Length: 471
Image (cartoon, rainbow, N blue to C red; front, side):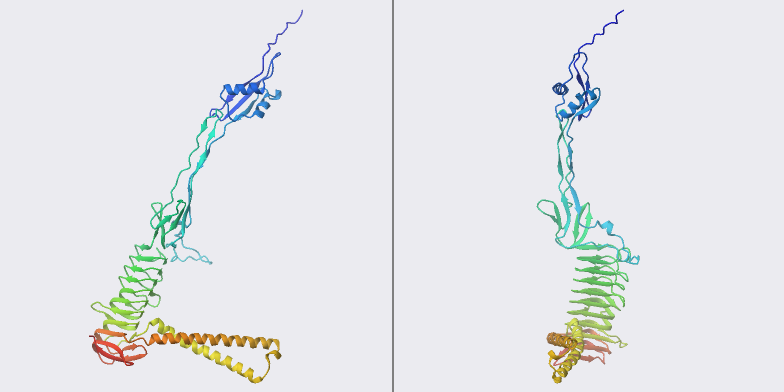
């Protein structure tokens, strides 16, 4: 019996298309032909893809791979979309340490921490770059395999954090300090302030202050701490054993009692309620309400004590033009020295210069004697041994150097002596009383008060100190 004949239908090969939900990828699966059917061609595969809407990102090599007999029945990736490139947000780069990160004391080499150095002040000079802004990048559009545009995420804009006393360049990419001052971030904006305010005492909670501008302290400056400012300093309370130094004026609403541990020094004037057992130096005036007691006080212009008590007692008080108080000295004949007629800084410099010049003069005379001794020997320098010839050359160099130094000292001494003699208008005024025991100096002249003087003024007249009335 003959076996039944199987009739195979002629069917051409084709492809099935699978498209991902996001329409970014398309796969094909090749179906094989049957009978005398023909295999699917590249053109046919692309035509079927087009019917499905796949028109972008088609890879012909991948289609050819899918059409190979060994890959029939397998899904092959044949088309991919182009993803969008998201934009980048603007970036702000701060060119200084964020203040909160600086409020930490630093260890020294031995691991010890000085809690007075808290890093509270953040000095910035005019023209300093504070922040740099990198503009946002817009991003690039993409396409899916259906050739639909994919819109990228736009980079977010972020303006420069421009606060008070800052300025940006025309492009808005660089932020610059307009003034010298304290840098801070307020409401997310960079601010530069010419004044820093301490709403408490200067103590371990604040640490030392060293500021390029002016400082306002509402409390006291406690013992052992340092406050420096290139501008002014105002203190609402007292200054104890601290170092206080300003390029401008210093106003202390309380008093100064720094003892041996500190000083108060100003490039301009100093104003305080009282000064007791302290060292105080001002480039211009010292103005005190109540009293100067057992202190060293120096002023480039005048010193005035002006309130009801208005007393100067004990210590040394120096001024270029005038010292004035209601009461000078005390009934107990407390040693009190008042000096006027010359800038105290010049007086100290002159005394130091005379001392150094005397020392240099001795060195010069010794070198000169050595040179004379060599000249008397009659020996030619060329005939000296090498080591002695080198020693002679060094002696000559030292001789010239010391001679030039002495000449410079002499020139400076002439200037200082002229300043020391500029004392015609200098005076000391006791508006009520000057007690015995007070030593008055005007220029190089000295006067010791032996008897109580009332309503007295001391001036220099023909080289001698003379007591006159206040009018």
